[in-house]
Length: 136
Image (cartoon, rainbow, N blue to C red):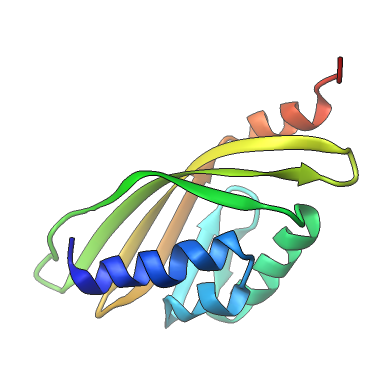
């Protein structure tokens, strides 16, 4: 893996999400970059810290575990590299007092050491079903 990309992911992207540090996650992005997922939709650079803060309020003890090593291709002629990683988010939904284990994946378009576009996918239906599941 390109050491710049490896450093970005290992020292900022993953720890930023794991600790709900919105400024650290934002620092991974180019100022014209954006984040997108099925829950929040498209979030522009300036809104990233606020999005992370909302997630931390929803799941205050969230943690992320990366499943395997990130994978990336070679840079295209314009210098863009796509990187992907699979993860598991765990935490407790305080309002419902229910634990969640949400698998997901990120696809990151990286250019000049910064994320230009981050696309995150996870099972929204599975998250809803976990929240509704009866406790024994």
